[in-house]
Length: 344
Image 1 (cartoon, rainbow, N blue to C red):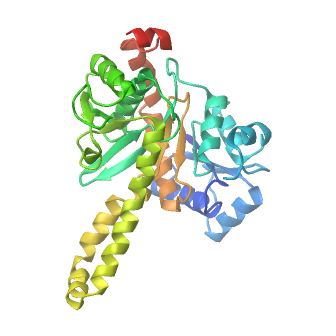
Image 2 (cartoon, rainbow, N blue to C red):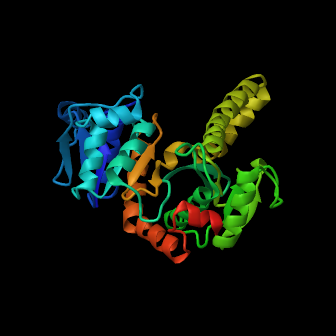
Image 3 (tube, rainbow, N blue to C red):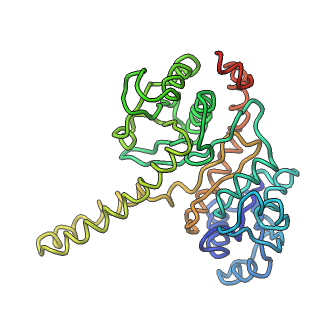
């Protein structure tokens, strides 16, 4: 595969994106072509810093502009046409690359992906997911910010796309799809949730019904569907839990000599727990429903996180996730317009 990495995206650019590309290249022994897009001088300086002489499978494409976190996404996409993000996504659209990975502005990446790549046939709205880890794996929460206001048919498609992604990414046969709600009963919640439950029950064989907030981190569902407003609030709350728990644990351990001694022997277990809840292990997630592969990473992504995000891009391409989404939408009769789906 040919995978574009936005070398200027993220809090630690260009160091983290370049190093992430190097780590991926070494780990996979040069199996894919990596295209680093951004300031050529800065990228080459980073490559030299890591004493890495790029082989033929790593190339640099110069881009003179950068979309910052402070830029208004849609305006920046229109005006900064030579930015690393816009130029990288255009390389994908024009067939010079098979995927795009960035830790830059999420809003700009969503806008550029939609404007430049378009949607998979039959998709009403693309959706952004996020991984929520639990003891034995991860759950995909979708949507987490791409669509603040949704209709039942949108949530229905989010569930189908999320299920297909989890099936091929984690080799989960028939992933369980749940609808985030305030109770398990099908008539619980507001009008949106009641109508969505009815539609999912009819169209999604893998639908397990409503899941509550207490089920989010226990693995009850492989995919949890909600609107982008609720999903974004829940995601940011979840991201804060590990840090708060870790700080509280350190304070309490230091207060007692016996606790400090016990903590020494518990370090392997603490490290394992931290690793399972570390976003770096999961890299990034695709903007599902886009007619291409656009992997969105956390703004503070490290080299390790970006390396793993490139792995996600490769799996998306190898498993032909978008083709499966299009086929499933067609097979299940979900390629109709909004009026027909509302009446379904």
